[in-house]
Image (cartoon, rainbow, N blue to C red; front, side, top):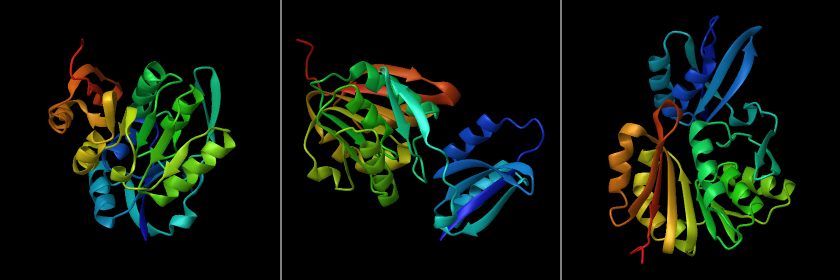
Length: 252
């Protein structure tokens, strides 16, 4: 059983700000709908307690109800242009529509750091958008990994529909090889328990891109990778941050 937060939108509501708050509160997906001819946002949560915490944060316009996950509305595929390549992204119930600030931060890094000789790992791949972008830019091999089987299914469909050679898997990180570029777009609380496994996927002279954390969480995220050197930090929209770290032992 999943849980749905339905939020009736009052006149003049800042929809983008509301969506950002919902992502921060841990929603697994958002859709704009109409409820009894009134504009609304619905946000999915795996646990009732998480949905109720979000409802309390949003206020009385938010209502929590149980929902059959199969009834979740499917958004239309999104188009994304990466390096002159047009990608069609089926979103479904997976995270990764290309417009969230953290995804934009990650895409910017992937675009700048990927070449034909780059082996790329996308951790928490969601719809596969970052892995697909890397493959479209010529990277090989490209692997996307996620523990959510729905996300794995959707990401595989996106790889096939875009004609891109991307391996999508739910294998444990420890079972994967080493990569030149590892990209992680997930909440800091989700990253912390897998940080050692992420570190283990870095080849010598590899680059690690981390997004999905808030600016004030930067010291926490940095502490997860104490042996890596920092190459870049950028604060994006709505206090979301991006770290670019390197496993290079020296600059010589």
